[in-house]
Image 1 (cartoon, rainbow, N blue to C red):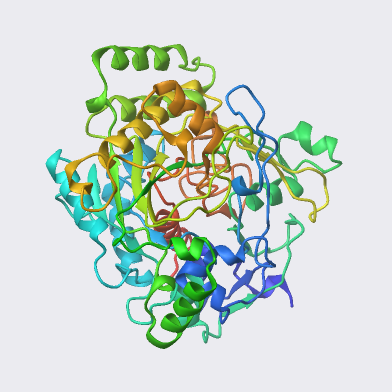
Image 2: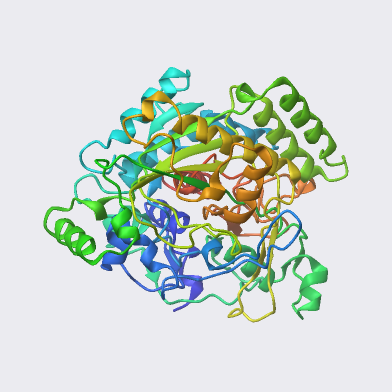
Amino acid sequence: MKMSSFDFVIIGGGTSGLVLANRLSEDPGQHVLVLEAGSDHYDDPRVNTPALFLTLLKSEADWAFETTPQTADWCLRRISRADLLVCSKDGRYEDPVFVPPSKSLIDSWGSLGNEGWNWNVLGRYFAKVYSSAQPSFAGGSPHPIRRAWAEAFEANGYLMTSNPLLNPTVGSFDLLSSIHPEKKERSYAVSAYYHPIKHRENLKVLTDAVVEKILFDDSRPPKVILAAGVFQSPKLLELSGIGDAKLLQRQGIQVIQDLPQVGENLHDHLVCYISYETLDDISTLDSLIRQEPEAIQQAMEEYATKKSGMLSSVGVYICVFLPLVNYLSGDSHDQLKEMLRQNRPTADDQRAKIYHDVAEKAILDSKQPSAAHFTAIAQQILPVDPNSSSPAGPVPGNFISFGVMLSHPLSRGSVHISSNNVSEPPIIDPKYLSNSVDIEVYARHLQYAETIASSPAFNKILKHPLRRRDPASDPTDLEQAKNYIRTSAISQWHPGGTCPMLPLEKGGVVDTHLRVYGTRNLRVVDASSIPLISTANLQATVYAFAERAADLIKEDHGLRS
């Protein structure tokens, strides 16, 4: 197979790669090749059954990347298996919830220096994704958590009155899931974007195809689009000679383009849960968490025969985007402003400064969310202090877990090659909570989760006084809340930003048309080129990002839409 026979070569058959493959092959005059390192698992029940996606962890479908030890003063433990920044080989096990970003978050992309990237432009691509990916409201009959959640936030003025899919602001809303509304199976890029058009003669997808590097010559090469993900895209750029020249020379790699920002700017959402015991008549997924044989057998039979029951969803039904400042006392507000001032980067570090300005605005603005809160209808097993009485595994009883996710982390890490061998995993150092502002904002949001759980709306769901699964999760004291986060927060698997779309002088790797600076015919289109990760789950944003990128590529090359 000659690469020159293809107009476009897409490296990576995950979410963004298959969106691009679908849209670029709409023009029958364009021949598109997709190279995917993973195997074809389209008929695998672990992929298609909504609640089984976690069984793919540490399987043949998983890159199983781990972070470096997070051992600085801000973190009380090394990163363990529970905290893996896992990455599937083709997007098969993204958490199957479909969350729109806040409108203000997308608008911030434009304020970073990316003209043409704002909600007015990108909003219509989200609408396009909703019809193509076909998400649904999962879970069968309405769970009482939906009503309690809505009542709680209606009482405090944070029930989102606008359509969260078309005008997402602050407030609570019901979540869509990446579950086909009729088939009741996982909807993901392979099923939504590839299988309906796999018959196209001008589209070729190769699985088990590992790309070692990108070659640059003066012949007529195909147009290459890197869509290998937040860890693999910067790795392949560096292996191909694009990155920090000093790093490349140490690894014996010829420097094609000195671009030191490749692999920098890694940021991710941490999530921390407080699990509260429910009243006895509230349905939860705890029997599956405890792997009770009878419950598993019943769930499997119900899903196989009716496509319903415990395996038909992941039990995450509702969410709220919340600001912070309305819940701070005057002293706390002043303290937070002072901490932001003390941590403001110098003008010399343009990239850090522009990100700090965006986060500061969101944190101090009552009309912008600084965290996402949600619930899961089961206890969550988190890392614990081994010298404490905290339970390390599942416990008896039924629980609802209140999750808190920091939407605008200021901490930045990196991902870089460990050698010039493609089979070696990259070095991933997210530097979680390394910016002291993050833990201050996070701890206060965790405290507010307890306020939600204590509200009258939850009297018919949770046992009162509140019974926490882990005694250490009591967030009443601010310092205790911080320690609990340091001990028990884990990655929510939303990393991004390692090849960011930014002006070159501000630390960018790609321009607003996703072209790699200093190259011809090379683009990066995936979560790595998203300059600032979404307010919550990243899946819907990556879909829309790729849809917009496809139109830009068509425009640049005069292709038929």
